[in-house]
Length: 172
Ligand SMILES: C[S@@+](CC[C@H](N)C(=O)[O-])C[C@H]1O[C@@H](n2cnc3c(N)ncnc32)[C@H](O)[C@@H]1O
Image 1 (spheres, rainbow, N blue to C red):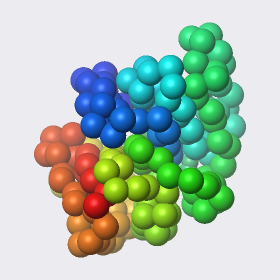
Image 2 (image 1 turned 90 degrees about the vertical axis):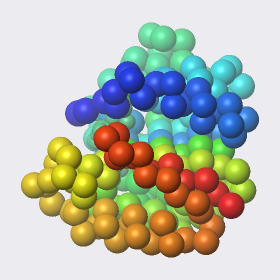
Image 3 (image 1 turned 180 degrees about the horizontal axis):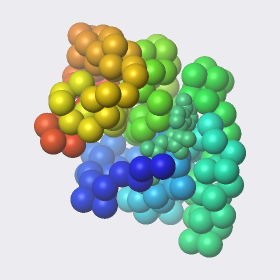
Image 4 (image 1 turned 30 degrees about the vertical axis):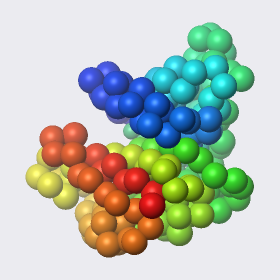
């Protein structure tokens, strides 16, 4: 389980502020580090929903949210992104993808459906495509397919951040 780097924490304050975030979605909760940072960045009126496929990770994250007084502001949705996303309703101001990239191509129609103009989608784990970590892991094709479709999608304007290898997509 690899939490995102604390050096990326300021990103969430910027993203929360730019989108006036009241509702954020994460796929890949892990032990809850980033969702806690997202919740803190959004402030007390912001709800973070975070999808986690692994029951042990979900349990540990929920425990951590309870300890930190964040249980009302961060809800763990148990299951795989590809199963949960189609069931979600309404719009999110911020979406963070940090799970199994082999599912990413299937998320594209859901990303359009679940965002409004001005929403921001942050996609992690693009590094295997660009010679960074994970180059030998399976699923490069899925990342490539996802990224080329996202970059060409007229509903989004996408910027790729070198070194972090995140994509930041603004919903148009
Ligand atoms: C890199 S960790 C997430 C770290 C977390 N975002 C953070 O920065 O603290 C990836 C997590 O995604 C979960 N995961 C992987 N594929 C998933 C999927 N398709 N749907 C939901 N969760 C998934 C894994 O079980 C793992 O806990």
